[in-house]
Length: 432
Image (cartoon, rainbow, N blue to C red):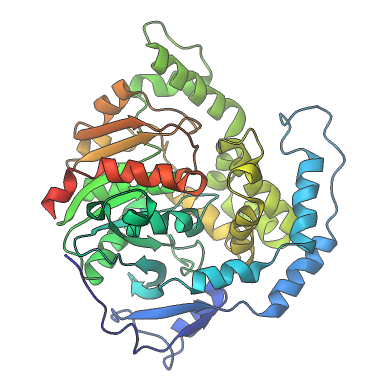
């Protein structure tokens, strides 16, 4: 069902810079709503120039460590590579470009469960477009999906058919981007999923689908377990498929057991390497998000290194994500974290989750009763085997290996990502 929001052009425009300002306005009875307010208000970004000048000053005063003692990235992002990124950030990068790009999109904010949720909502011109809510992860943001908005909402211009069209809703998880930062415990994936259903219903959609990778997969799983009325299905790019009997040996770094197929052994070894060599970032945020937050809030270089390492490692880019995502786009994402001061709050989402996001048993995927679609991208943290996927998700109806892309599917390959969503939800559209 197509919907309109009658209040969009009548409400006052928000001029916001950070979630702290958002919170301050929410506490001002003249400018913001009560907890019972269900209004949808236009949102506009206008970062004060003083904040951008302060960022450049801090970048100019970066004190770098000495050079790594290896010839590869086994000790982390190499000094020369990060220096190049930081130097451009301080001397060539322009935040205003992405600010203008975002302000050209329909952006809104609405209060759900006590917090202001900021989101992008782009409606297709096609009359029977399918509503899809797209959920980002870490170290990404809603910016992951920006280049996929066109192909999703206007398929005829991007090689598709009018019947492929989507209405796109891209919210920022509380504590990320321009959504309000939670000040109490409990904003875990289940609570976010409930908020997403409220958002979709508030926008007037009676039926919709959900898509996500990273945190977005966990939130989509949670939404599917809740199975609210109108949720037609979910699409995942980082599904939780590891069988219960393999979780402990993977975590222990044990060799792959006998009897696994080639794809299962590959997935086992990828997960073993991930938990054994590459998951320290998650351990820090799951156990000490506040301590991690001090680093990410005070030092632009620390923030950039912390986020950039995973963007490089998880994208299909041979550790050079600039070649796939683009240097400016990467810095857009890093700068968004800096300007909103969400290093600590985004880390706390790991604290709130604190489950093995890859374990089918931990995520209780067998409790999901709605249709599930999975797209496996070749440079995802692990490539979920079809055998594990069918076992983990009894309602799996679509499984496909995408030709290219990594963990940040929509960010890296927006056209391929779009084609996956078109195919995945083709049959589900019949239920609109």
